[in-house]
Length: 347
Image 1: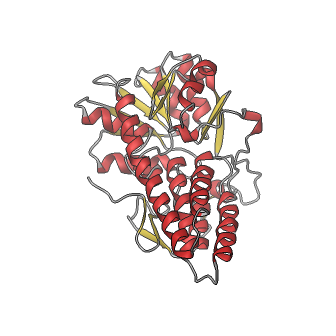
Image 2: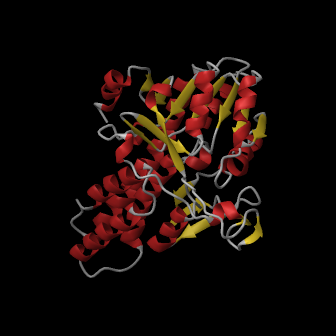
Image 3: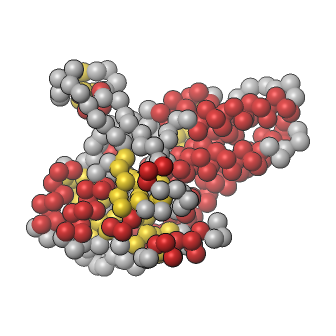
């Protein structure tokens, strides 16, 4: 099934509202930066590569959202916008890359019209590059999948997490496109159920065989030999860890115990190689996400309202648990201290 891009420009920023899935496919229009900021914060748009494009489009949107008296007023406005956008999600480094790259390009403009042209052109370029690199990662990663494999994954790493195609899910799509028979086991992914709401939905739309499990069933499906490989995405990769959706660390431990390869799929913009796990802030979500079945309207309690909640969105998997990292420049194998810098040298 063919979809429009997850996020795109059509006179303003438009995106698939992921909070409405799987009930309905709805396009959200962001005509002002505050609309996009709200969409990022409430996860209408999410996924590290998609946030990279969202950050870029946010800078472009800020240049168009109102009239400006002079060039300096516009430049100051987009600088302020960059700060606002950067504060929306602390863990995914791709967001900052999209913002900073587009801001740098826009500030080269010497007129209001030129600034607008440069910002939008750069944002569109970033979006196009994401689709291209996802397809490239898919081709590389497909080499790690054999005909008949069952792949376990967590969260959503497909079209909805990117501009199009996907990272870890993109690898699975590419393997199937090559004619391989591949089945997928999807963790529901707490909090927010992005595996059951988004990944399962995507796979069904594409006609890919999928089985949904709760997060705490991963151990038994590995124990029973129901999984051949684990593929996950990443929100930030530092020198000693991979940050991804909460529960990824658990999968890595289980995969190691059951001698199952554990692969990470992420573009090179996800690497923050000068940092370590201790340097990274892990975003914590609202307690209501674990207390109510319907968070927005606060209906259907599934826990006592006054219970103490710890609700981190991500965890850190030690990098030595990772069998290989699939990027758009190729597959990186251990030792990572030695091999990762070779891939990062030219970006």
